[in-house]
Image 1 (tube, rainbow, N blue to C red):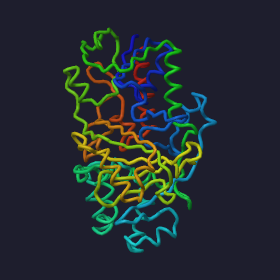
Image 2: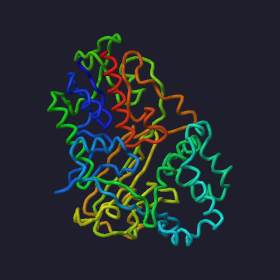
Image 3: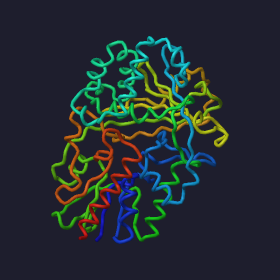
Image 4: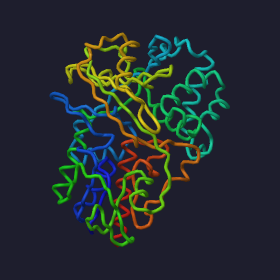
Length: 408
């Protein structure tokens, strides 16, 4: 069969690679590069992801893909430290002693948080799909813990939509981030960058005869369920990894409205570490970014010849005006950095960065096949209730399996 794949992110590439050996694959990607949220910048003599990335010990299909692509020797495990910026102070919160010294919560509050973390590992997120995260925390931990700890996190991640987010997302997030030792979370990274996965997938697809069209947004899609026209090109099957409502706008076919939000991520190369050795810092006060991710407090800065920091912001609708400049100014002010200590900066904005896992989200997840089109992506079951590299790979493999079933 001739397969038209919409979107060259990780999910689309995994599906294309799995199917290209036996089928005629044509992939359409609107950007001039592949990888979507896993794409990278090439800075001087190194690569760095446009959005901060790491993997977790349970990411079995990611590890299988890494083995398949011959990258197993690149996978390394490190400890990621965490912190909390409140007032004008960055509080490291990695070691038990640092957590005990943290003045924002009482010992009883901290004990409640520890119990919630243990409980999260045993909780089925689906049972919490209809419960707001805000309600869950207020009922189980009380208003002080919510106001001091969870409300700033939800605000920085979801903005005005934070009251709509389900406890399923929150508990899943707590559970996946609880693989900790004394030195921090156990997190994985590919020495040299995750761009190596994207590059090798691209080469593998092309070597099997697949065709990849960059800078080619899909502007027209029509068909009858048995044959399709994508940008005027005939295909037998369409696999779409783009948001379902965008697919609906293209095809005229009714698709579920998945709530999405955008992300604006600034990456900077700077002169020195201003984050006290902390990898991931959450910001308590409202500002132009909600988290500071110091990549080189996770991966040694010697590999890059400079320190690399991400400033993460999420938005709904349009990106705020002059956000990049506001981010820089705020970061320099709060972290005592001079502007001439910034070697370079890049801003990536994606209005479809990921779903908002609102209450009742699970009921919105579309079937893998709808009106003769196959759907997989961030919105799929495999990415519920939190998107990840692992989830996108699982979704890509699942949709490839659906196509193989169609063959028979």
